[in-house]
Length: 241
Image (tube, rainbow, N blue to C red; front, side, top):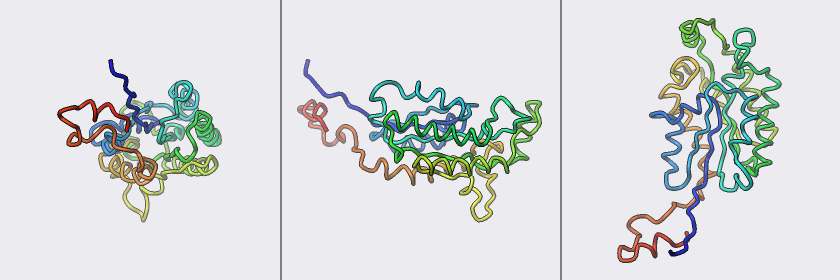
């Protein structure tokens, strides 16, 4: 059997809560990023619905794997806060106090750095704004009162921006961008909390603006089909790139 070098795909890891987990659905922002990076990079969805930053920093080392696991990671997005900002008296299970949330994000950044993912490859994403009337309907359908606040979500978004600066990571401030110039941010949300199709497009567009420079130099993996020698495909397909 002829010897060959295994093909290694670099990775972009999407780490977050349900807004990340759902991002691989049809027209989702994660699926859009994965499509842009086909044949260049694997986009790995590590979204965990319902999770907060407290739980995130506990499970992150298990998700990263063992030694040299970060060697081929091109970028990591860290997208928590939508559950952390739950009101303590209405949703204590998911609520994380603001200061702890900030520290948890910084700990996530430090864990990634200690695993070999440099801070310039980390992108924090703030929670989006919350449309209270729509989310209250969802809560009432489940037999509970409104358990989140638009203003409180904004405080967590600000904390996310500060934490990113303190660990040297980039940040996508959805809270600010979705409300820029007084625009109606509710169109970006399907139920007041999670993203609509338009919201997914918004996130994909702005995230790509931050990701593109980090993946611009990644090569096209394996030869273009027209460049394969049909008389001796092995000579094209088994050579190192």
